[in-house]
Image (cartoon, rainbow, N blue to C red; front, side, top):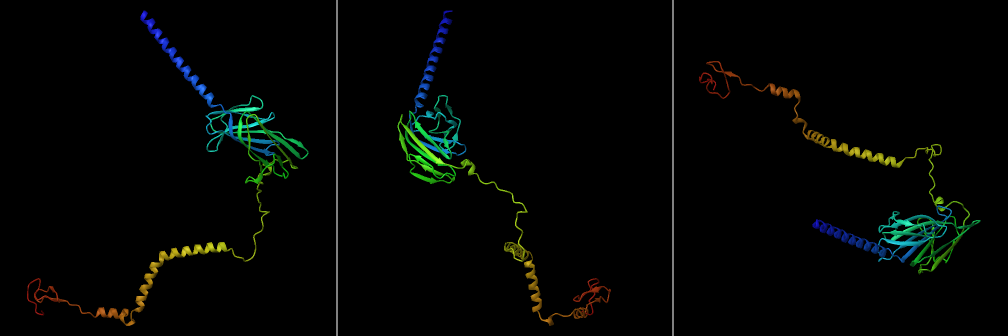
Length: 325
């Protein structure tokens, strides 16, 4: 009985030690993960602002670049306007592909917290603008506990807008292949706790959005009633003539390859016949006469009456010496 008690005590001791090791490993891993997700600095933040693009509002696209030595996965908290309508939260792979499969939380007002396994991320949201007649205006503000190495702001000018202005002023206005003009601001460094503000104003008389105005026009089907009548006259369609001529040439080459050798042989035979003298070709009647006048040797043995050949001296049947020979 005492041996069983000792064995049970040893088993409990081993289980206890295993649990302590497991808790140590799990606790160390959790501590390590928490240390890796502490992000306090962003290398750069690209801010693309598209007013009146696909909604009567301002679409803001934030693309963040983490420092190269940031442990991943990383957790970042980004400030949002109080009246923001969050549209998308995504990570950006090394190939430039966007995936919205990351965890995020916007339950805390005025910000969104996300965890990304990639060093780049994207946040998109809409915010309203102020409208007075045809005049529109809005402000973009950034203030965060994150230190941003540089903020790069680009404002897309809506279609049918000529007098868009920014404050601070843009250092360049450049067209792109998508059909828009872009107002580009100089890079700005924003330390942690400091703020950056951009104000945009523009006038616009049309109500259509930029995405609607840039859609390609729908093609209409052409009916036979709207088609022009075919031209009359004797003018030649040279393209058709050339195609037909090419077909005839191909047929001619094929015919020559098929019958050319026979034609050459026939012509050569006819040429030889024409080159021979006429006197060397006897007429049919003369040839028949010559054949009929050729003497035929027929003789028989005088003793036994058997037929003999021209050169025989003795009869091959009876052996008698032949008189004529």
